[in-house]
Image 1 (cartoon, rainbow, N blue to C red):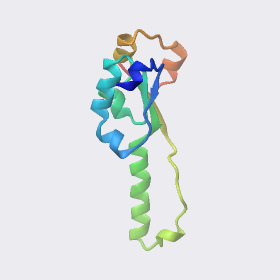
Image 2: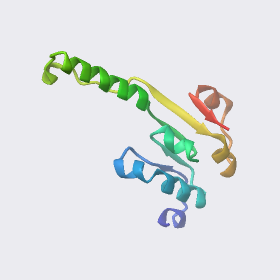
Image 3: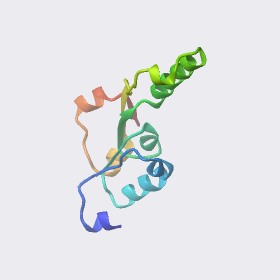
Image 4: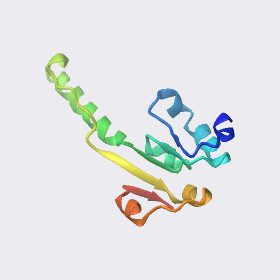
Length: 117
């Protein structure tokens, strides 16, 4: 892995359909080469990634459902305002923290929406 040879200090995995479909493989590679990595969706932290910070998919899907409801009631899609996510989640995986030999400040743990033990 080129990132390991370059002695990269960290990795930020962005929002991308391909990256999301390969989350377990990317998390495993980051762990194998001891590269601290942060992801966009909580699913990556759940499968072993260090941490994630991104839009709450539950909230995003709820917004989409509201849009669909308005369209089914007769609203023209072009008349509806553009929306952005309104809720973001910080998830920290303590098992990954320990495996990487890192320390997470107590204040950051207190701010997290979810801490995986």
